[in-house]
Length: 402
Length: 92
Image 1 (spheres, each protein chain N blue to C red):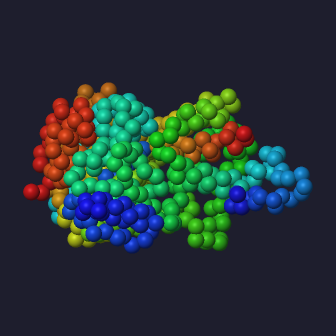
Image 2 (image 1 turned 90 degrees about the vertical axis):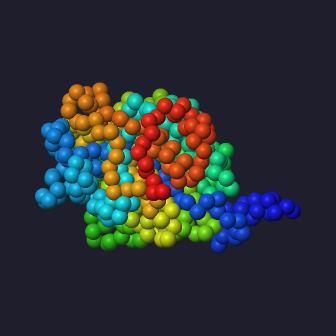
Image 3 (image 1 turned 60 degrees about the vertical axis):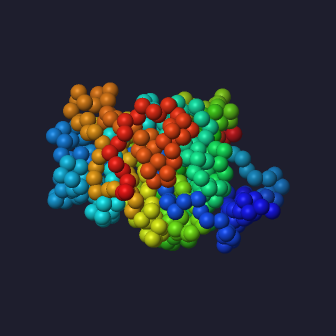
């Protein structure tokens, strides 16, 4: 057996062992010492609520009931640079910002300009300019270009492999044995479904009542249900993913997924639905960083979402599907401590279609810069294989530390 | 099956499990089914089309609002969970 085929065999055995939960056997070094984590925020993150442009003179008037209080006031946002702030629910990320390990890229979007979550996420993950153009994900294609990458390089954290990691390159997947329960918003959507069906609607109402009561009187029976220790479990998963990435022979490109961003109703501001989801995200990112340990210095985490949300509040205290949002980059390898992007402003004539934050940057450009600057892929390869038809995207200021 | 309250071969009478609505629409049974639907959906292929599946399974009987809510779910797996949770699907 040649050294090369033995290495491939060991890598395959190692990947299988990882999936079976056994200790890894590997003599092969990982493809790179850099780590990349992409966090898919499914449901369209309101970037204006995550990183509010409180210094924009139209911020308060356009956002209305969704506007956060100024820094220093009760429930006020955390200032970043005098113009942008952090939603107080993301306060744990301020430490990263202060250490220059958090970079926000604002007013960015993929090429998608419609309003379907499914199609928007397809395009977000397939890296092309139309939702159904590629049956593979841009990150899978990127791993395929990484010299030395094998089936243990990529890792889907969760029960399924998302489109982002599907494709010609085999990837591993890992999910904990104890899984987070569905979140509360699922039951709200089911209640909507049952609106026209009195039998089901009543049964649901009764079950929610008695379910809530049982939780109080009997306590958790060890199975995480709606709410409860779901947040803790998600944090643990992120921390464990970090530990996997930290291992010398562990994966190098991981994907995590987070839900709960589709805040059409009762979005809240410093408290409420979105704040809860943001808090969970912040805690997960902190746990992920801790799990990475010394490898954090060579890590980039990138959050991506299919589109943003409307600037104005809708009739149900929430926001509807928009266009541009914000992307977060965290990691020891990030040149952070800044909010970048060309800010279009929130005046009525500056909004996209009169309703959304206008996209002035392309999310693909952010991903490209990370793939080239952090993983060392060749720009020409990234523009042909990973993000076809992306040559026109404007270059960004430097994202990474030298 | 046991979790959903109908362990095989353990029916209350030789007539089998009851199938009138009031028997399986009990609130606790419904909640278990909803949790099952949500958990199952998270294990299914995330590239499946909820609209296509809805059309194939409940198409003829689906209320337009049901199809609309499924199509507007925040992600595909959630759409499938809603399909499985729908009254139309449970009545099949």
